[in-house]
Amino acid sequence: MTTNHTLSLNITFRGLDATDALRKYATEKLSHCVSKFLHQNAEGHLVLKVEKSRQIAELSMHANGTHFNGSEESEDLYKTLDLLADSISQQLRKHKEKLKSHH
Image: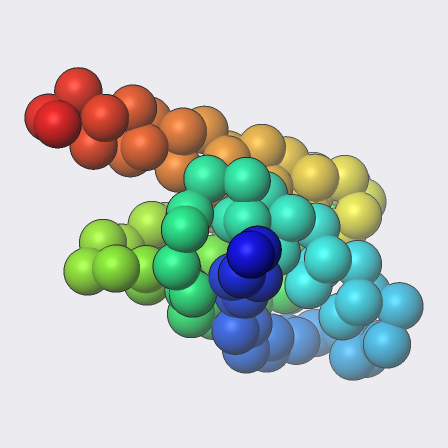
């Protein structure tokens, strides 16, 4: 029996229009990286903002009593989300390895 663990993601847009495509991409990208490493549901708040030519994504996530934070920026918001997903994946991988080494 397989249980789907989900990421409940609240997205805030600052300085740009909230598009369904961007919302869907961010949710799918981050949910995928979370589901690879966590075996419980997680809650997160993602802030997507534009400051001049900088596209910034900041994620604050809470899962099973642990907080994960990430912030990335680039010239393209989709690329920024990819970088953020990589950063969060790395944090989650380290956390999972740490838990395994203690058991």
